[in-house]
Image 1 (cartoon, rainbow, N blue to C red):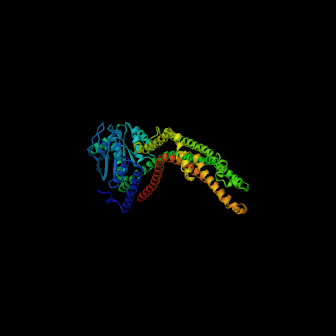
Image 2 (tube, rainbow, N blue to C red):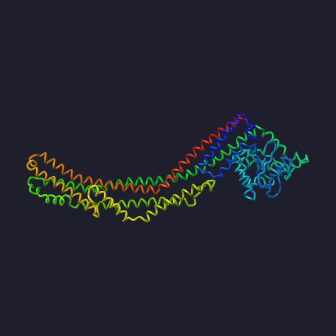
Image 3 (tube, helix red, strand yellow):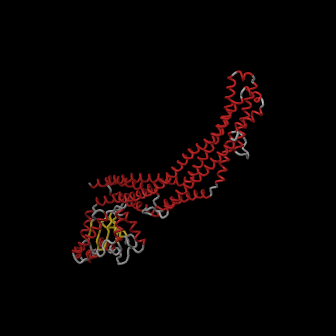
Length: 561
């Protein structure tokens, strides 16, 4: 019979909401990466919504579970023995309730115990059978913890009460089980002390054994306390218990992973802060080092102004008419050793840049090396399900290993001479382009000389043009001022073009160095940020689902009010 056939409209609406809620939970857990094995209890809980009330009998083998089911049914439906006999889950119909006898929780065959573990999430009520001669063993405690985590209602049955000699011993066993169960479950469960064997014999023709079997209070509890309304309430609450257990479990797993990622975020922040400090420090130092180059060019410009003022005088008119003499004087007095000084300063900047780049790679390698050491022996990070957690931790470890190895390889193969030559060539080509001079195989100093000589030729042409203007040059001050301004612009233009070309080239090199470091760390950084976003989203989703579970529980409780 389908469950929906016996539900009220209000119960049917709650059932539909539970389906939506549990399906949303499944989607959230799939996005998190939950395995099929760990999703199975949720799938079974969703299926359970269509089934009749399910009472699952669990406990250690030889506790008398099969004998208990036989006694309840009044028929020998299950094999009994001192060795594990129940090798599969066996449902029995009893008064509109399905009763399931499961293999022992400490079964020698692991598949038997797994059957029990997998079936519990579907239970609407768990009857936990323990034996009076060895009540509440360690394996029973461990299994009861699992049942508690699934949020199941548990009734404890202490079987084989007939082996206890008197009431005092029975009271002691009951108290022992009650105290331990309360501490473990957080609530005081219903406890029944019975003899399944006596109850079975009473039902099969020995009624005098019925009173002492202790079975009547248990059956009254099942028939009376678990009436239709109570069973329906448990039926609707149990899937919510499974959902709540999964929400709690995976919320913790997500928070644990996010906690580990916080360490990764700190590492990345350290690297990013290092790179930011590297850029800022390089820019600051570069400005100072480029000032030395600018000073050489500014000094050349100052000498040009002095040369111009000294040359363009009436007493030097004959010299001004000699083009080659003016140009040679300009190159000797103005250009002087500026090209050599510039080349020296630029080479110093190149060496400084190469050394700074190398040292920055070393710092990143040290950071990642320390991180790799932290990963050793810490693959799982303490999560409850090792197999499920391993892909996340393996990917973290792999990326740190890969990035660290790549950075180490850069350090080990760093060719300073090659890097310096590449930088120097870049500076030379930039200056050559700015000076409109063919770089060829010549050095930076030669290119600066060519640029300065071109300026010298231009200045000479301006001087001669001014002299050829004859009397106007010497008589009309405006003409001379105009000529002086033109020549100053020519010299200043050379300085500005050379300085800007070097600034641009080296600024790009500093940025390129930082970009190479960024690119090396990028795979690890992308993983950390992507996983962090996914985990935060998972936690947010699970928090919302937990609130919805609480709301539906209240609606179920309201039905019984």
